[in-house]
Image 1 (cartoon, rainbow, N blue to C red):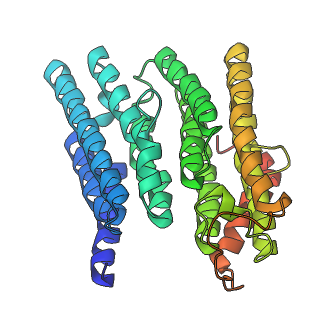
Image 2 (image 1 turned 90 degrees about the horizontal axis):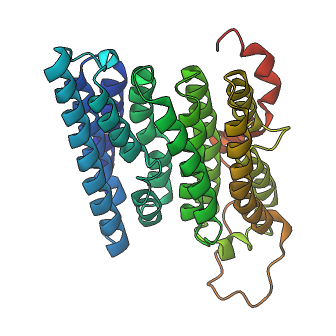
Length: 346
């Protein structure tokens, strides 16, 4: 892909995201989502590998269906109330259709099946965009419409997402699929609190995006796509592997690290809302995803590979680690001490 084409697609992504997050009118929000979808498709299929083409096709079909549902939901609401304003979504049928549409856009269970397949077919850098930047516009729509949506439905979808994200990730050996199921699991945590404390959802999303970016850029730097190749990286880049270990544990939400902060605040808020049983359930289900993060971390740092690994040895990667990875990994592991500053914002 030529630099000019890449520039046009990246600019379109920024434009689409900006249009959606700054719009008040449903048609503008829908147009932004469409621009985003069309801009990311060439980035998914740029390798011309059959799996990449398949991923792009699956992505296009699901996003087109979700966009049609967004349009249908907003038109139904406008028909009944005369309002095209995003925050004025009051008709129950429209709220139900919109919940399905945003769940499909995000890859939230039970509409999650496309996401691991698409991430597996896309390159790591495009996978990073799909996991972070492409989820921002739907999350903002969810944030703006959250007072109108059904909390019970959102809670059920959130628990289902955390459960399926944990269970389906247990048996995977492909790193991109593991990160896709990790994303589905994290979306469950974001969705469960959106009706009660929407700002916590945004905080969770920002910290998730930070940690996922650190993981994807590290994996891109050491050219790793499978667990078997991850086992051989320890001898080549020990410092980077050690930081990957800590970032993965942070993504799992272990206490002294950044990832613990949103989980702690969400559990606290759920308890305040008399939803202690829900908080216990989602905490126990997140132990499933902790298992595969530990597997990744174990493969990245603790194992020394046997001499008979059945894959081609990678050439030694350069020892220059970018400043961006350094900043992101430090932020992904050491932001917990800022938590006393958050209550006034939240």
